[in-house]
Length: 167
Picture (cartoon, rainbow, N blue to C red):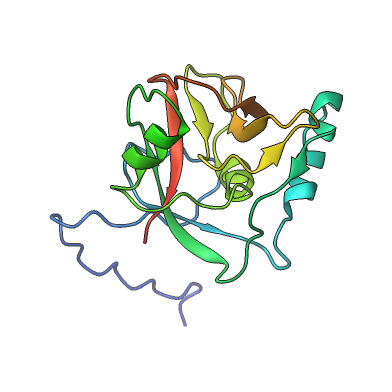
């Protein structure tokens, strides 16, 4: 009797269809390459997401967005649309690829991605956090690879990659 079971070969893959990437730890997706993220049950809440950031200034942010409801696994892509003059231009550019996910999905991406310093910023175009003064914020993974928040402003550069939920 063999010591190990024989592993069946992988089924043939059509080279003309881009296959989604399975959930793998420490990966960096390529431009517009689909991948899956899973949300544990119960899902993370917006207020819990703020608590992950150690900076005191972010602790005052109030979550005003939509909480995640099932299903708990979705397909995503990272998109680099280039310069966008404001948040509405970002959302318009991303709509070609899918829909803007709830902000807490950025944490699931953060927990799977490779930690490294780079020039790019990863973000979700969901301004669901509000400061006591009424300013809107979006969650990002900054160029140091840390979770952070950025105020909604005019002008988003070419170094920002946006998380998009594939429909």
